[in-house]
Length: 66
Image (cartoon, rainbow, N blue to C red; front, side, top):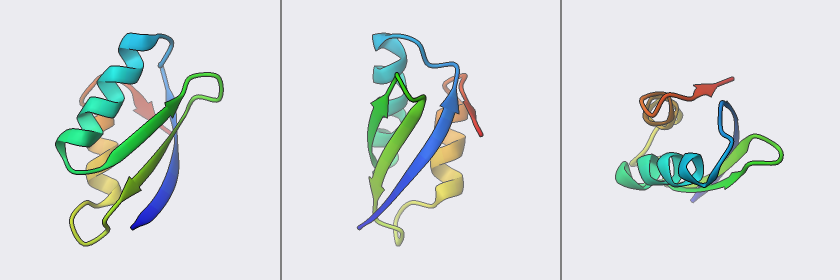
């Protein structure tokens, strides 16, 4: 398993947390949002999920990965 921390702009509430973590879960990654720092720490299997796919899943929810 790999870990990566992504900087995500636009998250501000519990709904944002559920939205981002749910989108990552749907593609097989385990995300943990930290609203205070504006980051998402993701644990994933690089053989199954790419960083590009994670970024796309988050951006599809209306947030910007920077």
